[in-house]
Structure formats: structure tokens, C-alpha cells
View: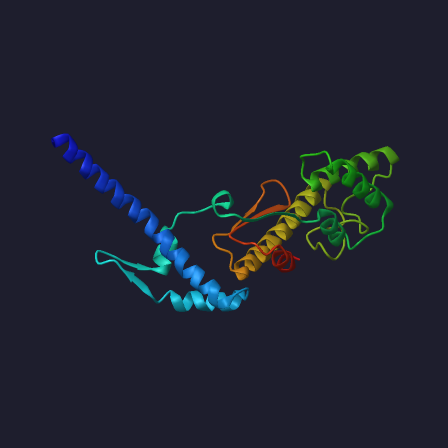
Length: 231
């Protein structure tokens, strides 16, 4: 009898634990579905409805649930459980290099960029690292002794940190920082746009060592809407 009593107590405790874990998820989902039903595909209206519905509470007697509190405690459901849209974006680093050189037409630069585009297809290295490798190889093969700080390359008004006598290694470090900052800016813009879509539990991450941004939007179904927002 004592064994049965213990099993009953354990079952009750486990049930309460499960209830405590599942209730926030259920309540947050309930509020979000209500907001979606009212707002439709309008992200601004959705956020307003969420703000309005967040004032409601679920009184369970022993505790009260608010949307914000439930949202913090809810179970995180990924694409495998909730479905949705997964997008892998890549920032065009050739465009970033061109921008930093003022869209120079220097033949060594153009050849290095073209070669980098080919090499990058089968490379795991960062685009900018491959670019510098190709530039150095072409520069050496042609015997041009072209410096990265040359006004036709990175020694222009775009990069004020680069002077006419800045060593190549320093120029490379400066360019890498600028490109990383540009990718970071793009990441913030994309994350802001995703938030405006009203996606539930979006996961936006930079892929380390690349100019790629991974976006997961559980529950999102409208591919055209996502494309339009991200373009």
C-alpha cells in the first residue's frame, strides 16, 4: 500500500511539473493566435494586438499568468515541431570589396575578384581571405608590386584609416574589420525586419567565419511575404 501511495505522489508531482512547463506555452500560443486572427498579415497591427492582449491574465487560483511572463517561460519549439521557414542569406562580399575600393577598375583588382569568385565555390575560407590570397599571387606573378594602400585600391577617401604608406598587413586587417562591420549591420537590419514580420520565436544568427546569416521562423508560412521583407 505504501508503494502505491508513493507512486501516486510521484505521479501527482510529475503532473504538476508538466503542467507548470506546458501552461506558459499554451497560454502564450493562445494569445498569439488571437492576435493573428485579428491582425491577419499586418505585422504592426499584430504587435498592437499583442500589447493589448498582454494586459489580460490567466487566473489559476494558485498562480496568475501574464503573456510576457508566459512568453519567457514557454517551451521553445523549433521548425521540426512547429514548421515554418528556414532561410540562409549570404552578403555579397565582392560588392563590399568594390565599395571599399570606390568601384576601382584596376585590372589586378578585377582579376583577383574574378579568380576569388571561382575559388570560393569550392572553398571553406572566408571570401576576403581568398581575395587577398589571389591578389598577392597575381600581383607577384605579374611583377606589378601593387600595394593595397594604392589610391586605385584601398587607399582612397572611403577608407580614411588607410594612408599611402600603410603596410599591406595593416590594410588587410582594416578591410576585414570593415567587412565584418558591414555584415554586422546587415544582420541587425535583417533581425529588425524579421521582428516586424511577427514571427514567433524567430532565430536569427550569424554563421561564424562567414558572411552568412541563418534565419529560422517557426510558424511562418507565407514565403512571398518573407522574401519581400528580406529583399
